[in-house]
Length: 102
Image (cartoon, rainbow, N blue to C red):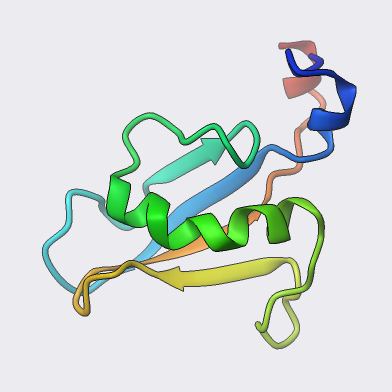
């Protein structure tokens, strides 16, 4: 399915965000997954604090800039602003063959 803003936007997403750690109070739980259709389309249900922490890295991930993760340059791990919050894993989402039919 082509993005409403044109085919060039298809290359900017989708981006997958998963909660991989939780050390404090947070409405999100380990295993929660959110998908950005493109770097500007915040997924429903993702809190503003987590979205704000991810924002500087969304375009980096979408454009393929390597992260600082040793051996995993396509994956960013971002901590939310709370010192006892959650850790989010951000990466490009690879659509499956069945997704192409949607």
